[in-house]
Amino acid sequence: MKDYLRMLKFLEGHKGLFRLTVTIMFIASFFEGIQLTLLVPMFDRIFTNKAIIIPNKVPAFAARLIEKINSIEPSSLFWSLPLIIFALLLIKQLMIFCYQYFMNDISNRITRDVRNKVYEKIQHLSLEYFSTKRTGELVGRITGDVQLIENTISYGLVDLFRQTFLIFFYIATAFFIYAKAAIIIFCVFPLLTIPISQIGKKLRKLSKSSQEKFADLNSLLIETISGIKVVKAFCMENYEIERFKKKSQEMYKIVMKSVKRLLAINPITEIYGTICGVVMFLWLGSKVMGQEISLGIFVLFFASLMSIISPVKKLGNTHAMIQKALAANDRIYEVLDAEIVVKEKPNAVVLKEMREKISLENVYFHYDKKSQDVLKDIDLEIKKGQLMAIVGPTGTGKTSLVNLIPRFYDPTGGRVKMDGIDLKDATLKSLRDQIGIVTQESILFNDTVRANIAYGHLEATQEEIEEAAKKAYAHQFVAKMPQGYDTVIGDRGFRLSGGEKQRISIARAILKNPPVLILDEATSQLDSEAEKLVQEALDKLMEGRTVIAIAHRLSTIMKADKIVILEEGRIVGEDKHDDLLQSSSLYKKLFTLQFQV
Image (cartoon, rainbow, N blue to C red):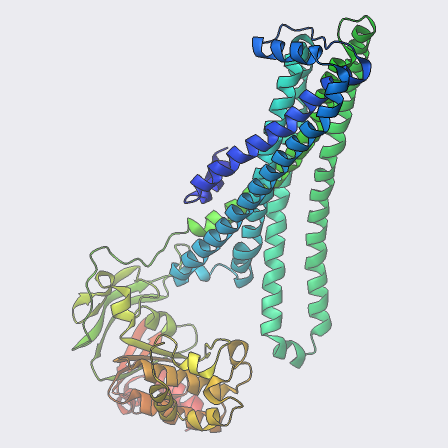
């Protein structure tokens, strides 16, 4: 119940419309139930010309109504009946249309709101969260899981209320006609909820497994489609096809287990209802034959009893649907409840443009509590206008170190400061507005060249965009594209070469015009010709800025003002190139390996 109430929190903001919808649903159910209650006795009166007899003592208004019907000539009732039927049908269908439209409106609003909430939360989560989650899994939360909740609200809640109302009316009718018989039946009826409840619990587990398999399938699709060049280069098409088939088969098995249990609900309720119906038929049929009740009342009671079976079956299916939605709800709340590790303080200060230096004081860092420190006892100063390079063997914490500066992560020990202000005390926007980043993997979007260069600066003019592209040596190849700056470059810049992607990324950084620039092995994946062009673009970009560069190719940072050597997460050397060749055996080894001198 707690989980169900939590799912219903998504109704926040739509409660007024929801109450109106439920009220209309109640009216529609009333008119659906009243048809049976009125029409069956009237049919009995018309075609048998016998008085309606009810064994129970009924309220005064009902007794007067029955007396009135009994006093009307059957021929008069006969001609009035079509008008009554049409009026009831018209009102009922109008109410049904209204509540179905409103409930679909509510469900689609909730789908929109939940997707927005999940996506908004994903955007605000720290990078640490994404290191443990797959892209396909998160996509599944926004698409598949949210869709399950939408289905439950648009169909499940409709049936939950409507079928409950109908059951209430049919039970009230049965008690109204013959309370003694109704009590016996409805004391036994709750036993039916036991198998349905057990089926629902199992379906919730299976649904969670099914959504996890769906996430696996999503992840595999995203990985193989985005990496299709590698798949084809290594002739792994058949291997990936078999992997996909295996995941599909696993999902198929779980889905069929759910189907089997879902389909079991109908025969269980049908058999139970039929047994109850047969018992009532034999018992009350004998009373009709003994003229203790009229045939119409017998038919009405029996019809009311048998009419309960269909709503109960639908409620069973609704319960199963809700259990599936609750599994999806759990997965959605896993995202919504995820802790944002890198937070902005309520009273955070706005950083002014860096005037003096960035400093790391006794910094330690690890990615999670179970892992060892990636950075240990880091003390470092990066002065304004300085070109500082970070080198070291793979896996020594170079990228981890630079990721602390824009606060993608926070240090687990020590402090990172800008002009004496702890970065934890500053607003994220004022910090990150000062930092431009160019990484070894160019992150581009399936949009136009213009949109990719102006990303983060949507107000930039065409002249400013072209000027940035010229400085990045990108304007020449962009101008040759079919639509120039309006050319869509494909998913992750699929239509561009590695050097072209990198120059677009550099143009984006130039347009941002940040005082601090981080270069994370920006030329490591390029061939010599592309590297030359990109390095020229980087030289333009670095002019007049504070630059922190990670480089495997030492040729790109030999002119750095300061080179920092990292080994096993510690700084083991810090000086200029020529001095490090004399003082650091590790730097000399790295240099010798690259230049063979």
